[in-house]
Amino acid sequence: RLSSPFTDAVTAWEYISDDKSQVLLNLIRTERHGNMPVQYIRVKGLEENAIYIDEQSGREYSSVILSEVGIPCPANEREGQIILRLKV
Image 1 (cartoon, helix red, strand yellow):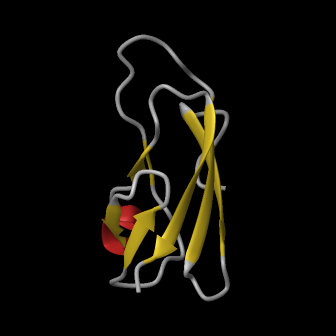
Image 2 (cartoon, one colour):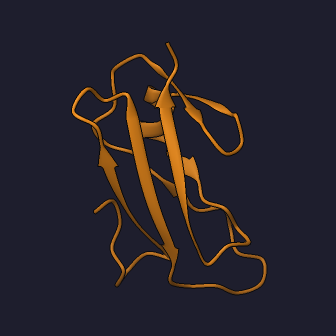
């Protein structure tokens, strides 16, 4: 689990492949109201100094940014999945 359903506005957990080439993030927004700030989820266990691609948006993220800052959660969705693949 990447965040707590009791204290965070977004509950998130991840599944990561053994070779660290694919990451599946599951997100459930537990708090929702107008003008919510962007929520970021820090991803753990990634390949060091690598680039990951969000399959849905096509955006590229550094593994350092994903683990230190996090990936922004979709603001308009109650729940969702983000699939990241290692850029080869």
